[in-house]
Length: 128
Image (cartoon, rainbow, N blue to C red; front, top):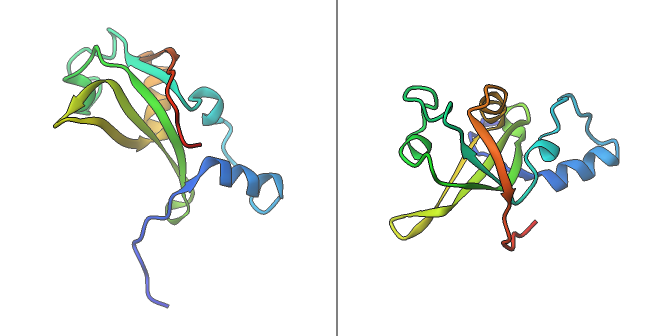
């Protein structure tokens, strides 16, 4: 059987349905859907804005921008590694909203180091 490097994203709602049916077993203890709920809004703290702390220019070049959680995904091709999709609601890049996916572990680390903080819940429609 040939190896494929295709990424297969699965919505968190689908994974949770599989979990409730006992088709998969959950091994993480952080519960990202509770820490980073859909539509929750985040920003960099003054501590996180210190040069060299956060290695992603989208954040460091725009420290005053807010980012909304658009989705949390599991990647079964990478041992169910989870990613979080963030979209800037206060800035655009080339006329488009800035949207990126990041490893959820990295975002949890930023939260633990108090480099990011929750601001509010966005009042936008999201396809959940």
